[in-house]
Amino acid sequence: MKRALFGLEFIAGVLAIVVAAVVVGSTLGSATLVRAAIEKARSDSAASSNQPQLSALVAHGQKLFAVNCSHCHADDATGDEGPDLHGLTKSDERIKGIITNGIKGEMPAFGKKLQEADKDALLGFLRSLK
Ligand code: HEC
Image (cartoon, rainbow, N blue to C red):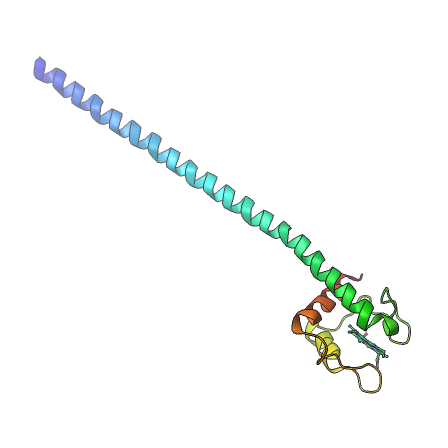
């Protein structure tokens, strides 16, 4: 009788260990889920925190445009001596090429005057024009 009781206790003990393992396992599992959610939230907010960075780039581009380009393309880039720059269909590379090399007899080259980052900012500004 005593032996049988011990057997039952043993089984109960094993069961307790199994239950504990399942509980711990699922807690770890949900901890992983929580961590995944935090990662996602973090990357989402990283994406939205690109927004102010982008508008800072556009604002910088707008300043450069006012100094270098607006006397030909107008302050709002709707065109004057140079054409309207809204809705450009040329590729980023082409536009940066035009800024760098100018257009013979039409538009001066800015390759010596503007850094790569300035051209990126100008491009960002031009792309922000709808
Ligand atoms: C001296 C006047 C002048 C200045 C300054 C000038 N541009 Fe131009 N730009 C022109 C003219 C004129 C054209 C059109 C040439 C043509 O179509 O043959 C042109 C064309 C362009 C084009 C091509 C537009 C298209 O539809 O293909 C881009 C882009 C451009 N300019 C950007 C700029 C930027 C950015 C600046 C300042 C960094 C600038 N321009 C400064 C006169 C100017």
